Length: 625
Image 1 (cartoon, rainbow, N blue to C red):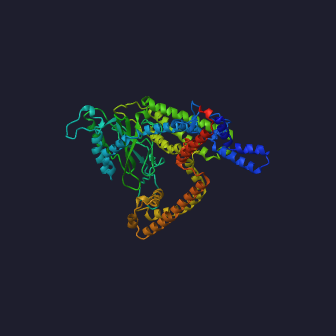
Image 2 (image 1 turned 120 degrees about the vertical axis):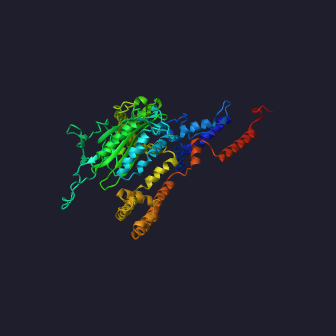
Image 3 (image 1 turned 90 degrees about the horizontal axis):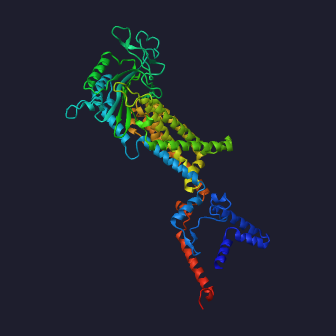
């Protein structure tokens, strides 16, 4: 009877029930009771999770269940406290309206991270960085050359000693089997290639009046000014020039064969090329030295040359890492020598599918399958909602950017397989293997995956938007978006004005201001406090201090503080409009854990109720007299 009375009292205390019964007893004449009942009903419906609001009986089957309970019935008919694990299970299922979507997306993010980290060679071991650093250290003399004479000295000296080692550090000769190990550390794959790119002698215009003084004009390298005709001495007994042009396809590359220069120039994969031998022979270095000397004697590099490249491939056996090394010497039309070392690092599994591990192959397959499933879900939602309502939601824009980047990454991934399919691994000793084309696709694949990492992780806010502190960042961005756009317009006006000013005043003297792009980067760094005032003062004592003071006042003092104020205003708007729920309180509510004070009050209430019940219970009910 007592239990029945308690259940009845509990029923009466549920939101809206007490007021509904009062309304029924009063015949519906009390408007104040109607309003109270409505408020209680609304409060009760808000306390229930969205999962309960969309079902008639909820997870537990109780139509009027209002939230997670930390007690449960025991075998003796009483109530006992739930275990922590049970509270966690009930809290997760009760408070998460997107349980399966969010869980599957977290699994997808984990798989994405596995694929991304394996592409770079691992998360904890910096093997890839150490390999590229060591290669640059071996050929560090190349970065220091400043003339053609120094380039020839490097090729005949450091290059041949590094690629074709002959002695140990104590001058003892190395064994024949170690001859093809670059610096006695890395296996040389195929032959060493040397090629150059040239321009025509009419690739620039000669001003009127200079025709009698200037007969040839060699301009900048472009696809239109490239020279492809044979040149050099004639082959004995023929009318054919010795040096002939070879296309990228002739050299074994079909896609992605180009190389980027230091000045935004894109060099094709072809050129006037030749190969240095890499046989297991003691005379390999001597034969290569004779070949290089012949090029030097025949004036192989002249005014028409715009770029010379030394290319070779190495393989680190213990870590299964391959690298294509390209030592580029550019000769711009403005004069001088610009050396640059380009290293593309990849695994053999990135080039040949049969060498890829089963784990990586499985994770990439699962990731592709999940991307296809997510794309199908979005296409179905697009079809149901229509184009205009669908794209009103900014999350859908982010979804499609994310998907397109994934498809681009997969396309680049498999393009590397196609490009390397024509190269037999390991390549022949006397044949140059053009792995740079496949390496470019691998590098682009990693870059696209890196850029897509931001969108993939940012979408976590979409799947956990029901958590107040998770949705706050997105809400602040939305609240401040309009003011931020207006601020960026004002900032661009001020910023670009200073860009032109610095470019005109320092473009010919300081490298950081030599182009419009570098001016933008340098001034952006100045807004963050990274500047070289002595450099500004050195080359322009009058305008340098003026530019620096004005830009610092406008960007650092005024505009930057305005931007912070806009963000803070948006944050205040969001904080005022959302429920005041702290992280600790949200976690407590999610897992159904009551505060300590409430538990103490509940225990005190149970003790008082027990004592009252004991005093009012007849003796015969307890077995007494």
